[in-house]
Length: 171
Image (cartoon, rainbow, N blue to C red; front, side, top):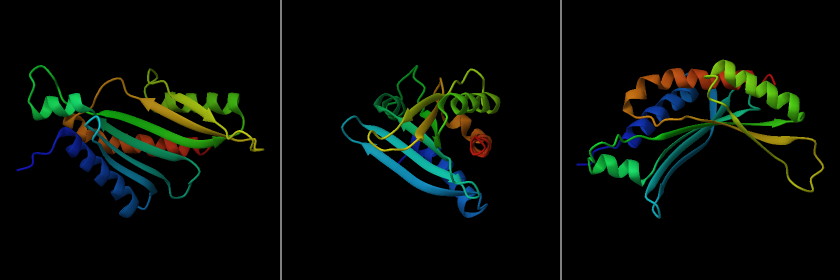
């Protein structure tokens, strides 16, 4: 019989909570979903993107990843290794004023998330296009892996993401 991995259990819990915000609460719209098994390196990835229904200009993405080491540690029950997943949060938005908006974004994220969880902002623009806007990808990278012990934290994590979306829409 199939025994679900930490990745599978976290994926299902995260997916259910996000879909409840879409289908039951009508607070968000899900815009993309990825569920990938990378056979060449034996890794798993799950991602879901969504935005606030009332304020659709900023998109959030939750990404869970498990590599071969994590999957093997669990399946083979390797001693002294704690299986888990990497959690990455990203926010996507357009900006016009790099210095002022990026600074505001950093301050907003420091207020909502831990101050030591510094966001990484990556700006891009299509060369040759005459536009005054930049695409900003804002990443929050957590310093440790998560596992099933953090499952109860999913509703609070999602509320932080929703608050972040609300505040980023004001920038």
